[in-house]
Image 1 (cartoon, rainbow, N blue to C red):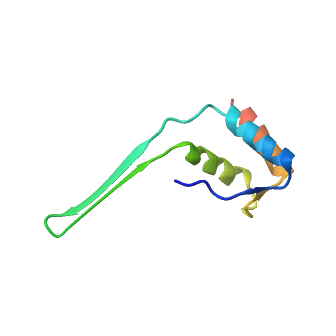
Image 2 (image 1 turned 135 degrees about the vertical axis):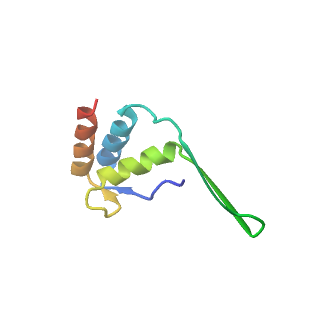
Length: 88
């Protein structure tokens, strides 16, 4: 999974976001999902997805970017950091 593209309003917004993300409950365990679909002889399809560090980043951006404009402002980053702090 690739990281979503996101801009930060300023350096402070980026720093606050990354600090809050790194201080969260650590890295979630990697998960793996498998999907198989088979029709004997005619068709077989397998898909394997393994989550990684980009999953955590993407989920953080999704929560932090409240107006979904692809740009994290300093107020959005501060709210995100406060929410992460409360979850501890």
